[in-house]
Image (tube, rainbow, N blue to C red; front, side):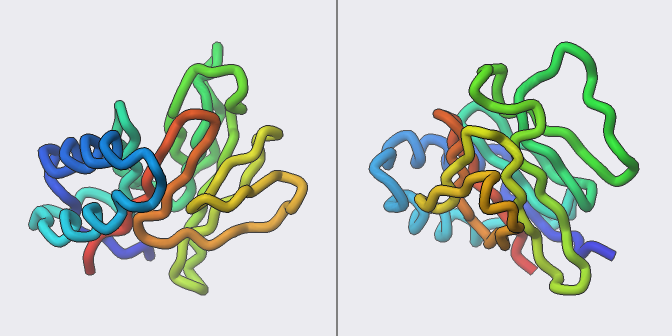
Length: 154
């Protein structure tokens, strides 16, 4: 079973996005994110949270896909969740697959988009064809879309 956690309020997430806008130079804004993450709700909502400049999603399935909006609705297997991050053509419909590994009790990212992505400033491409462990407050940059992967406080 996946653990459930507590997450920051909507107002705190908005503050994180504002801080990210102010700190576009890189990971400088993460220190502030870490401080803000200390304040959490008491109502568990999901297993993880995805926060972008114009969106936020709660992950409530053991596998989720980040990608662009498709003309037709994505066909998902049981236990999968799709999160639309953009409508840009340079982002694949299934650009990133993130899944929970119960053995390791960790989340892993698999890049499927031909244009790759940056994870905490390091390039990840589909050619490497390996799963990469995600950590709390990991920064994903897919094209010009910046996303933070947030794990709740235990």
